[in-house]
Amino acid sequence: MPNNVLSVDDQKKQAARFAVNDLVEKGILRSGMRIGLGTGSTAMPAVHRIAELIGEGTLSGLLAVPTSFQTTIACEELGIPVYSLNSREIGGNLDLAIDGADEVDPDNNLIKGGGAALLLEKIVAYNSARFVIVADESKSVDGLGTKFPLPVEVVPEARVSVTAHLSRLGATAAIRYAVKKAGPVITDNGNIILDCLWAPGTSCDPRALEEAINGIAGVVENGFFTKIRPAVYIAHADGSVEQR
Image 1 (cartoon, rainbow, N blue to C red):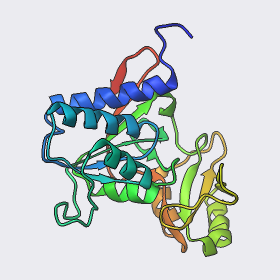
Image 2 (image 1 turned 45 degrees about the vertical axis):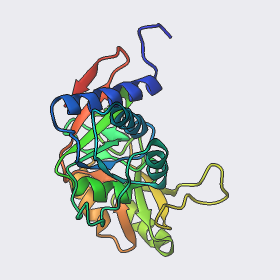
Image 3 (image 1 turned 90 degrees about the vertical axis):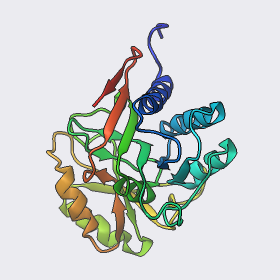
Image 4 (image 1 turned 180 degrees about the vertical axis):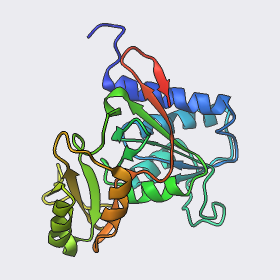
């Protein structure tokens, strides 16, 4: 790989660090704020950069609401104070949420949930005054749902019925199986994940599908994020960062 070409991992770090620095410079991320911190391989560098800024004294008094066990543990290890969205100090609302995404379309609609934390990620995002996404260039797509599967969190007893409903919506659904555990992935909430794909070339309307899928009995949440328009930072292999 040429020296001037960033790997995907380096793109993730570049996007996260650039975004956090930019948010601080613009006064969007400030001391004393209530912030949601996302899950996954791009969100983690953002968490680490925030911890560095706290250590330097640039930021202080942050109240962080993590979206998964993974992020909670990282915050605890890095010394970032952790709260629940229900905490009195948070009051159910956040000033800012920073997270990664699995796919981003030209309208900044998203698929999230590759780490199976979509339920809390959506609760945090949809209760934040501002929502920021950091991503590498591979996450930018023309349309959602035909390359990276849409995760749907489902009550285990509803697996077969929900699969049938998803099929009628044009999706092929498959249980997500664990890598280092026998059996399906179990979410932080004790449910399973159905990963759904639409056929290549299919015109997928994420806004309509977000509503339709959540209307299926037994569905807890799905990974389409269309009801809040995020600011998006996408790092490219040449080191540049695109801001949408």
